[in-house]
Length: 267
Image (cartoon, rainbow, N blue to C red; front, side):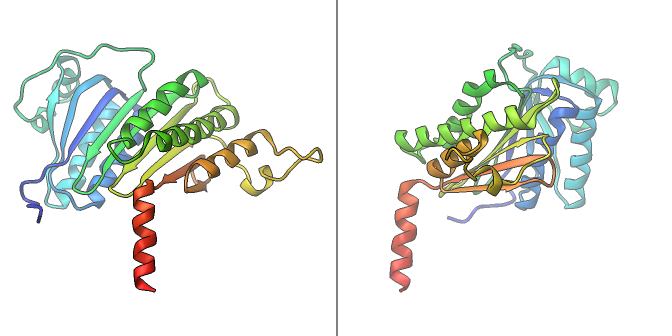
């Protein structure tokens, strides 16, 4: 069935705090939406508990980028506390006339920034947590929830959560030295795979070296984590251009079977 691009409006939902730390996550998702050629995204701020001028400026900058593509960007839901930031700055024209929502309840266990978008062929979610192992359960469960929309079996989800947990542990222990450090998580779900990116601010490492065994036969501590990741998901990639990003790619077994069948049919 063809998609009417004139009527399709991707929804981008933000939650938590949108400040200097969170703006990067917002930009990642809006960049993905813009790159997909989607028209006129709608930004839902009802779940945002705090936004400063940096967050406001980021949204206004992205609005200009969409306008340059002959598109638009509107805020369709907002709570009164965040609306005040727009009012003081004289930027209420970006807000679509819609009902205001009560401010969300702020929880210490909530990610710093939560950003999600649904486009025509994929779902994109991005959030940031403080670099602490106490957020491990939250991150594992959130990733499983984002990627588990009928795509994976319970066994596959368990494998995914283990791989994500190992990547997060390495990011916290080896890539986050400062008390204010954060770990960013980004998920892209399509019909045939889930891609999870876990980023920290660390200087990086040589994956081949950490996988080398000590004289006693045991790999380095984070080498064991990499081994587990490679066992539990289908692809593990590393990027050190901006800190350290570990990318985990997992295909559902049904998709793998279809790929094998298609390959056999062509040979």
